[in-house]
Image 1 (tube, helix red, strand yellow):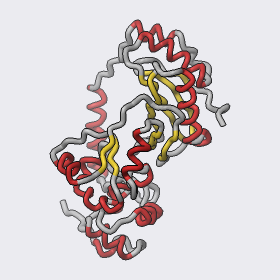
Image 2: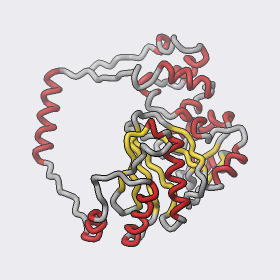
Image 3: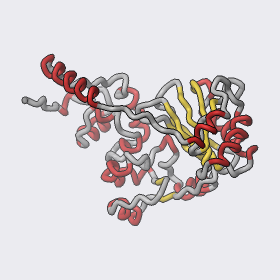
Image 4: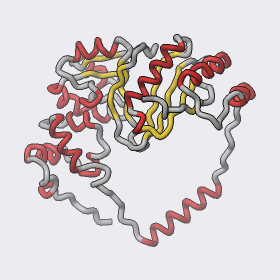
Length: 292
């Protein structure tokens, strides 16, 4: 089968010269660009945060459509194989324990709960559960939402923060990523380029939009360590946000404040619906229309 060769000189003529040259040198095709995080693009030598914005304005999921060429014969064959696999696949319904079913029976699925009511309900249900993390699951109206929440209270989660240097680089190179947040300066980004394939899939690649690329990483580390700062973003291909906002053993009023502020911070107008749950408990649908 003949392959189509990429004419790199004809790519990115709609971008500034230095940006086009950097992307060509990195051998990145347009369809590969949309799959990369901003931090991964900044890791390319010569690409700045301003350049990333220029790239995103032109090369995004809406402007770059990649469809493989498939013959009718190949398509028919693929459909036949898919039908055979589907016919053989046996879907086994998930079995729920009697304990879980008892918890479900205490929730009215037809109503919307205020944040306070939801927290109170989860506090009762959590007595049947060993794991106690309060989780907020949000269906948004669009993908690509990201930002940072300033919560009034701690999430109860210990955050392990690393600041990029030669020692951290050696750890990453050996496969050791024992941190949940990695901070870097803009000057560090080209050095991080070779680690993009390791850090990107784990969500650890520094990114200016999440505040992990900064001129003062020490100050930023102190802010994040305080526990009330929480980055958020929708999943790569789905308009969904998952947040852990505290432990059910914390004060109920603190949890109500954290959940309410998270919904406000993301912006209620951008949210279709939201559910609150505690690990291993059923979810409670929230009444978000009253939150301003």
